[in-house]
Length: 406
Length: 225
Ligand SMILES: Nc1ncnc2c1ncn2[C@@H]1O[C@H](COP(=O)(O)OP(=O)(O)OP(=O)(O)O)[C@@H](O)[C@H]1O
Ligand SMILES: [Mg+2]
Image (cartoon, rainbow over all chains, first blue to last red; front, side):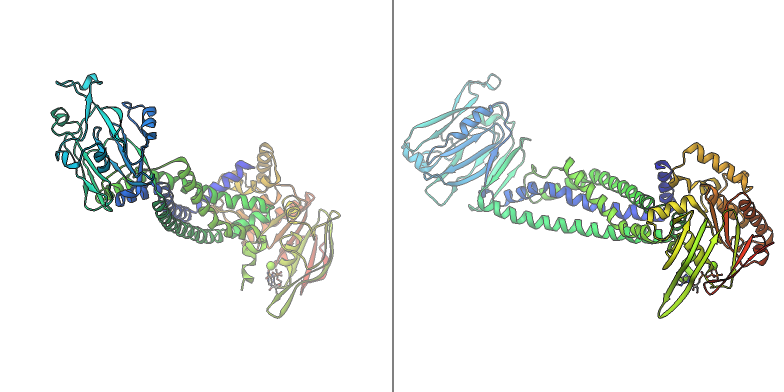
């Protein structure tokens, strides 16, 4: 019985070629839209992060999540926990650096992601003062304090200097030291000083007088330009592939939540329109094609097919077409998504300077969610016409009665 | 045995009530061939549809072998149509894109007949109606008379007790009409009850009894000699 009914279903599908093609195409087209909406909603937080980060970097704190093996995770933890009152907190990895300045009262004055390659020190004016020095003491392009010691064979230069010690000077003038082993060194590195408007003034310098540091050229240019405190642009010619996550402060979390809701609503609207239009299209093509076959189903009923059988035959067709269309949409969209999203990424990169967030994001959850949505839209449209033939009496379906149809 | 008592079916069109079947009581004996005649609109087809469980009666009773058909639920009614009766329509009601044997086999699926058994039965029945050479020919390429023989084969495949035929020769020329009539005769002779609606007097004479319908009632039944 199952085999025979399945054969009837396949014959019905192949006999209504126009219907089958129309239905599949409409479901597939809508399905691709649904896929893109679903796929991009998976990527949405990352995209928003990306955009927000570039617009108002002062609002974010960057936390390293991917450390190169030069510094162990444990070491990083140690560095992270070194929070000194009124001092700079500096996390360094060979490629990514996080800088956050904390006020003595514990509030964060400024945090920013800075892509540098290792060796610099940060002082606040106050700290310098506490150390009995002033900004003026520091030659404009000289380092504040960069101590170098020999710990990396590979990078030993003529004068035997290859690693850097990061020093954080506390208010009381004492110095916390951290060894930083560098395997790449800045080529051309300029940080301009920045006025935070508070007593904290940050000066980040690289020892450009140090020929050893200056002449190692593996890392390209990093420039931060601070036009004013609220808008910071960062042009990065070269960044390593290291990843990091970004944590938001409360205000930007709210902003992003609002934006998330907005974008999600747009995506849901697109999906719903696609869903509804494909369901309507399916419904229309089914109504027409099944009406064309009333006498067939009437005949089946007259010779003893039950409602159950008729509904299996009716829904079987829809299910097969819906599954096929959903598969097609998911496949096509998945393949296209890579290109669409990377094109999108390229476009965004014309306005923003980093590229870490907009990766083609496809996961099992997104694909199955899209599949189910498309499948449902394909089925929903067919329910009414199929139920109609299921519930109509044989005599009503058969041509017999047509003469009385008024 | 098929017992019909006080069977009524009215249609309401706008404010008019059409008494399509208006209180018919009759007893159809097993293995006999009945012809139903009457003017157009006298309720013959409606009556046959009632017997076949294709439409529900407004009142009255149909009993088949002591079991009441009126008031059966949907599934039981389907089973009754599938196993106890075979229906033949004037316009054949075959699936034109299926082959002869595929059409004939259609009623065996809901009946749950095993593959070997149904194929054997189909072969026999196609031979019975004289169509065994056309097994794998598509129905749409058959002549009207051949189609009606396939329809008869389909009606017979589940070995029902009753064959209901609504003007089975209505679309056929006299030659083909004769073939179908002699088949129906043969079916009755082989022990099935055949109830046939016809406008053709000659055909009616082949039956064992003729029921004349007038305005939804049996005006009289005349046994043929
Ligand atoms: N579904 C229906 N809706 C409304 N009226 C109907 C319906 N079926 C039958 N009738 C009416 O019932 C009456 C009997 O119809 P029926 O088809 O049984 O006649 P008939 O004897 O078979 O006629 P014919 O010889 O032309 O086939 C007719 O007046 C018809 O208009
Ligand atoms: Mg009629």
